[in-house]
Length: 243
Image (cartoon, rainbow, N blue to C red; front, top):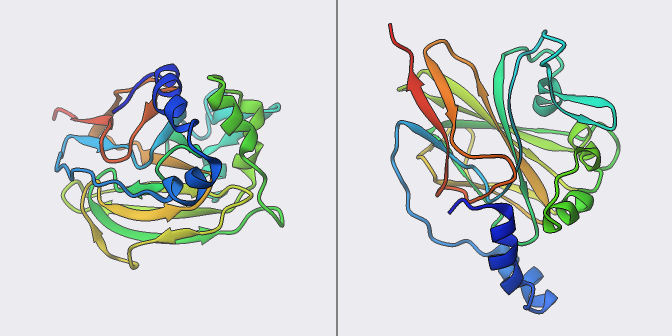
């Protein structure tokens, strides 16, 4: 369950660090633990195991608010996340970094029909994420090591929920050494909440993007730098607007 980064490092990571590197990389890394499948219409769950790097309401067109984070003096924007220079919906964005010690199975935060699209890297090759992994294992977060966010290959997953009549997005961002981002679903498949939908091999990051909708407000439940688990930890409470 969700815990402070320091507690995760001193607990699970400290124990796992005692294992031989071969066992960690060849067996433990590819684990796929059984987890309960909750049906909870009032919450979005985490799509990934990992550390919350940022969570922010972003308002495109408002210069003082349009960046998610600043990386070496450059803004990381919603358009960068989505790989779409025309994306202009005010959105809540939560970035989750998956380390070597995390489960790399991704799960659906809220049920819906899924479509996905692979977006190629801006440069010819992906930039490495290792510096951020080292930061996390040293219990620090340094945005200046996150320049991969503006350049790397990503898969844009679009999920539509008919009962809410609402569309949200999961963006999977590849590391330099990514072997594959492997979807488990076909285009247009219906996914239940917290169901497994994809695997990312080796490092990586997952961003949850929730466009703002006048019918709902989204209440953040956890703090930045906390370590969380896909399908187990609630990230957001949905509050229905009063008429």
